Structure formats: C-alpha cells, structure tokens
Image 1 (cartoon, rainbow, N blue to C red):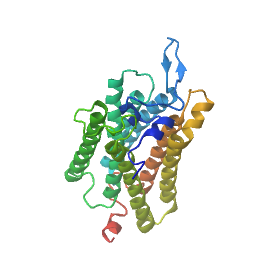
Image 2: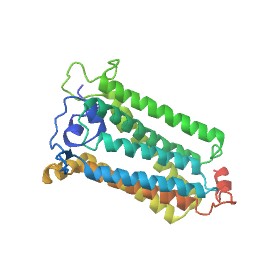
Image 3: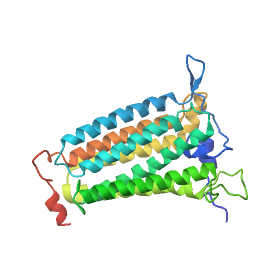
Image 4: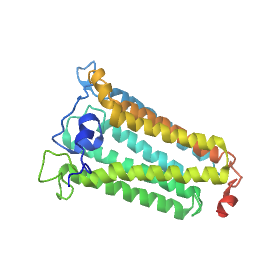
Length: 295
C-alpha cells in the first residue's frame, strides 16, 4: 500500500526544512538564493539569520527576567525551555541560513536544530505538567527529570538525524528500493510528529488549567494567540513558502515568516506564563496551588 508517511519529497521541494539537508538528492521548486553581500558571496536567508539573533537576545532577556520571579510556578523549567529555544535559534542560523555549502557541516547543524526542536517541544509538555504541581517545581527532582529527559530527547533525535545523514548504521537511511525517494520514517516521526503531539498536548493541558482553575480571560486569550501564531508560522513554512519564493525570485521564502511567527508565539507564551503567575512574586506562594490540589 502506497503511503506518504515518512516522505519528505514535497516538503523539501517546496520548503526549507533542516531535515532536507540530510538528503543528498534534493530538488527544489524555488532554490533560495537570498542576497549578495559586498564580498560577492550569497547570503541565502538573511531575514531568518537576523530574526534568529533577535530570538536569542529576547530569550536571554526572558531568562534573566524569570530569575526575578522567585515565587512563580515553573520558573526554572521556563528558563530551561527558553535556553532550549536559544539552541534552536543558533543552530537555525547555520543549518537554514543558506551560507554553508559543506554538506557534512550542514548535516551536523541540521541534526542539532532537529534535536533541539524536538527537545523544546518536549519541554513545553514538561512545563504543562509542572503547572499541575505533580512534583514541586524548581526542586531537585523536578529539575533533574526536566534536564535529564530533555537531554535524552535531544541526543536521541540528533543521533537519528546524524545517522540518517551520514548513514553510519544504515538503519535510518532512505528507502533502499528507491534511493531517489526522500523517505525517512525515523526523522519524519521525531521531527514532524513528536513535536506536533507535544505542542497540542501542552495547549490542551494549559487550556484546561486556565478554564478549570483560573477562570480568567487574559491567560486564555494569550494561550490561544500563542497557538495560532505558531500555526500561522507553519502555514508559511509548508504551504505559502513556494509562492513567496517564486514571487521574490528566490530572495525570501516561507522560513523567514515561520521564524517570525514562531518568535511571536514564544513571546506570547512568555506573556501567558507571566499572566498565570503574576501574583507570585518574592515572598509569596503560588496563588492557585491550593486549588490545584483539589483537582
């Protein structure tokens, strides 16, 4: 039975995904040429590079600001989440920036971006669980499980990507019966499906928390906005990218807007976290911790 599961053909043909760097026979609908620098070299994805730098700066600011909110639920876990987002942004500069031509180097940075993307999505899920106070947030047990699990997810996902790109074991290679087909079940699962499940689960858990416990409009509005912004970014990445690229003669594609809306989504996510912990400053306990115990 013919299935598109694991198939990156259309994704890589129309989009600029880091997973596409793992294949050596990618054909592009609209190759991203970007802009020519004063030195005469091409900088393929200047907008994404600049936005990634902005994401790094803002994430550092959020991490520092979170340090001041000593009484906020999930403060350390939120800092870990944004640190993971920093790794995603740094690796995206090299994996998707369009200025590295060495395929081996591209595979390494693409694997790091894939691993950190999956790890960041996992950390979203972990932050949702922390909000339910199943374990004391910020404690040794909670932080150890958060760091250990995210590290395992990162290493596992990055290894699958590396093995797929370099064919170390051959277990994650493309379909041997049709080498021209960009099919990789493992990368497809860890890079596309696992983050999707983690993000949707985070949204549902936090939605229930806001509706059941907080019963306030502002956090709910921010949560829905963050989810919608991220979704819009994915539409630009997977659907609209081809049209942007063709109408700009390869100077810009959807990855720029995907990066932009993802950045807005993380900013809104930060505002959402602040809104549900806004009364929890130094010297104060969680305002709704007692209510959580009743659920």
